[in-house]
Length: 513
Image 1 (cartoon, rainbow, N blue to C red):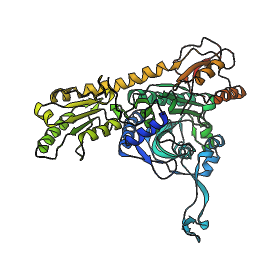
Image 2 (cartoon, rainbow, N blue to C red; image 1 turned 30 degrees about the horizontal axis):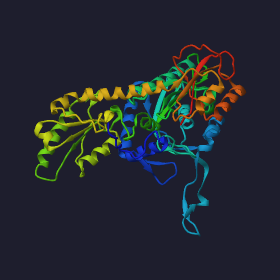
Image 3 (cartoon, one colour; image 1 turned 90 degrees about the horizontal axis):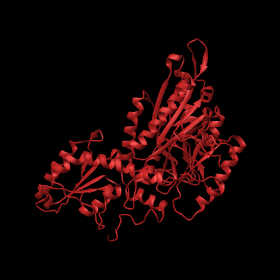
Image 4 (tube, helix red, strand yellow; image 1 turned 90 degrees about the vertical axis):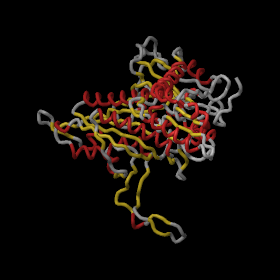
């Protein structure tokens, strides 16, 4: 096999962080905005987000949740009502204090001292407080429950260390907020949302995850229980890809969300919140990308098939374009993964080979190059993005007849979707170590000279308070965190790795984004 000349100049194994940045840039996903920590999401990147948003929104609405919109600006006094919550976000809050600018004597513009707001406004870091105030107005009786709301919005958290899609000062997300009569109903909703995220990650993003409860120290500020889905990236690190929180009655008590129960007594509602964000796109990149760029699962690809006519700027171009338009129409009439196939006829000027590599880097699932000989033979030159290279180190083009290509496109996209999932699942499971039984062994595992150490599953006694703090400090010294307690894990069969006491559950320990 000859040496492959990959589409990216940097390989994952050489520098995973720089490789990630190269994919974001060269796959035309996003770029810096001029504001620290904020990004411009370009059409291909935003097209993937639109697919995620649409397919997730269908699932949200299928559960009886209705979309709303709440203000970007939240009065500071709303946060002051929930001390634990505000403490968790205080260092990340952006605050508006003035409503007008004036010219400075030294030149430029400054906030007008006469235009200071009577009450500062926080730029939305999350919406529990403002939605809680609305729920307090909307809910009077048990008949008003459950109240199931969701909003698609942007939020701002003033991050110190940023990376596009993974951790930015402004990002896009959905946040579900619900209110219920009792704990059981609220917990049912919390776990429903968690399962929605698990199935979405695996079925749509082709990204295998573990769903489970976060430890006490990793709970959402003010929550009684936090659950997450955790995915393993190709560098062995964990990515928290979605969370669902049971908030108990603490937020209801702070916001005054009360209702008259069936016996006529006043009770506080039990509330939940849950969300996923544009971080999912970062997860897709680091789960499926390769040394040639991004590989987009067909379910979320803005275009699943890209047709590239090999135009020569001569009299034969019109006939070739006509052939390609007919192919486009035939493919667009097919159904794959439950929807019409999304196909693009790329007629932008440029050499076909250069355009091909642009689409390879973007990760379009199927690329069809059509030249004059293909047209005359009634064939297509077909390239699968998930199987880019042949044994000779050349792009693995096949040449099926046009009719065969059209008839097989649905099965091809389905095979790619499930193949990406299987590949990621096998890689994840091969990089989970379950035989470590001591802190020394754990330290050695993550200190060994290997680039992608993966995760370790250990058993613990679920310590709390100062005992938990000791465990967290031990892990912090190794740059490790507890990810979650995976659902449906086997029973424990050995002592707690940290305390030596009888274990009660299994947890994953890993380095994380």
